[in-house]
Length: 112
Image (cartoon, rainbow, N blue to C red; front, side, top):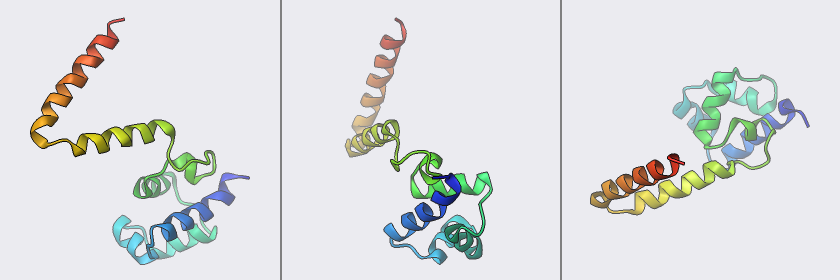
């Protein structure tokens, strides 16, 4: 299936899964409603910058939006997201210690 045929459906599915209206997405992304509607209907293809903006807005990769990947998040991004969630769960005063520990681990592993 070509990316041009996958993009509209995935874009619409992401919007409806997040219970968003075209108006809400338009207001939050500054992309005109008419353009968003045409993207979802497959009547218009967004420029690369707009496609990247929409991927970032929905938290997915451009590869997912265009049908190159079937996962909405690539495994590396999922691992990073998991680490970020853990980091955010740590008390603010302990975050410095976590960062310093991570820096030391990177130094040790990059010496090899």
